[in-house]
Image 1 (cartoon, rainbow, N blue to C red):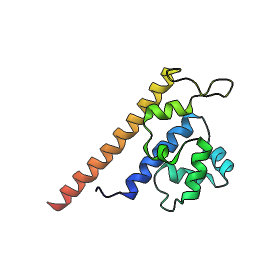
Image 2 (cartoon, rainbow, N blue to C red):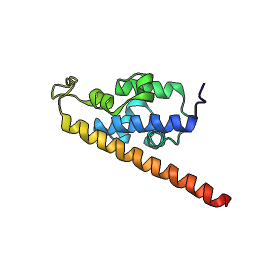
Image 3 (cartoon, one colour):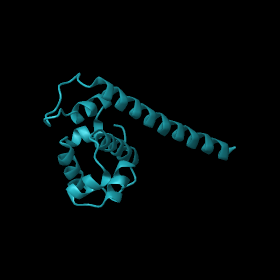
Image 4 (cartoon, rainbow, N blue to C red):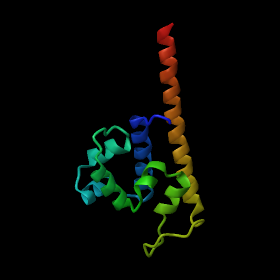
Length: 132
């Protein structure tokens, strides 16, 4: 069985929550106010730097975004797109509508992942350089 890395899990969770919040065009302040915390905590969660994340807070965030805990930890960009699309009446859009917005989300996510991987490679290269 593979060991669970808490820091990686927090980063994935934060990225997913950040992407959903931005796709819904909600501010940190609005989400924080809605669930009864401060916006710096939301920011830390989205950046994967909130090591004291408790289950009840995570459940509040999931309920706010209308997603499950499983989705919060494992959403693919296509799923995030589907969950965040609403028409003028406030109903969820059908899959396939507003594809341009979905592609924008996908590109944003890929750019974010690319940046993260470059940072991880640089950290490894720095470690290798320090051992020589």
